[in-house]
Length: 512
Image (cartoon, rainbow, N blue to C red; front, side, top):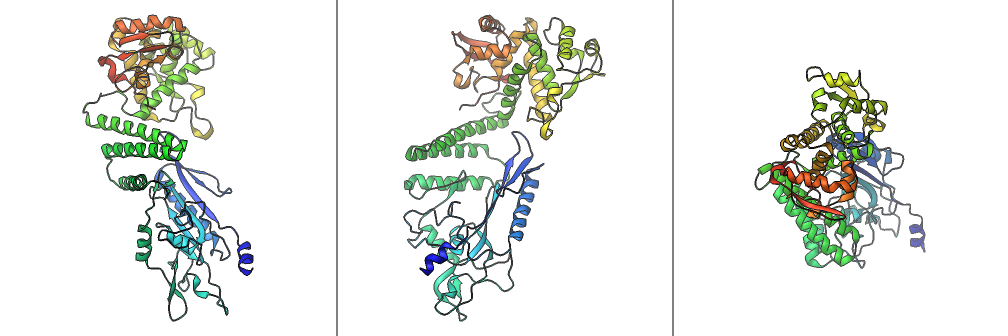
């Protein structure tokens, strides 16, 4: 009865978790969040600043928390605790998993530097977690007749938060003062070896998995953490790790029926493909020297084309092509320099009327007239503003790439639209938009669509600002100028392959 009464009076242990996440795709800034509702997310300019802020924030929580409460219950049961994750109530060496010892404040740090966690738990659970560090222990209860005063850990005199303390008591071993000594580290290590455990992709590897699969997942998690300590990236090794992860997670998903594991396997397979593409770009062996050199830039190219499709202020292919030029010149901060030569280089019928239409629609702001822009030179360019691209909430516009990526995307567009054969044949704006769309939506070997399965006619027609019935003629024109080969047009799809001559302009699509 007394034991049940004491258990009912225990309060829930406190937990603080501080996370570090990217603030956005392609951005160097990071976001720091805390599990405490009163703590607002913070945005830092770099990962190093984010880690410093996160560790200081957690230390502030620990200072404010004071001593751990000796009547607190163990808070780690739902947090991937090594002891509580056992099945059947037995520990790694067959021992009891009941909580025991004094309540402590333990801190666990993610080896990759993505999260930090502190919790109130019993000293037995803290010792069972291999990377936990005890920073404070609840004051011991004074011994009374019939009580076991030696069940808690020994605390150094004058110790406070951050002071070294013993984290677990070893039953049956006592000093002269009646206080039990902590369990030796070697004994704890031996008990953990009896049943291996580990984590991968923020998941605890279950102990009831098939031994071969469990060992592979544990070793793979260790290999990832080891790779993160490398001074220089080894993309071949990284790709092989991703391949192993994809195979292991697929097997894990088959065993457990967990769909999220299958999704993680698909992401790992795509990461392996991206790592190999990056390695080919770096070494130049068996790879195409593409104008846009990485998966992020390829994704940005498709994002810009889709944005222009949805936000062009003037209908028709010519208006769409001019929208693309102006968008890429102003994408970073909503403003940029344009010259008359830039506009005259596009196949536009009446460029001045088009520009005036942009101004009348409120999509474009000019310091003078459209004629002034067309007369400007590289020595005296015209600074234009696109209000919809100006930074707004959070100081960012609709795109998450920076100045360097913007310049590369602009250069890619100019090379594709102004490609020599397209200029010589005086290809119209719709054909040049189709050339861009095909280059941005191809596989690694130049076949149209992901896996080379072709592109939907409706998708291509939307990107080129034409009716789907006109697409067959545009595809034929691209075949004549040797942009496409092995072309086949059905009622729903266009399949084919980019010619080797223009393969450098391609942007491989993700395989998944």
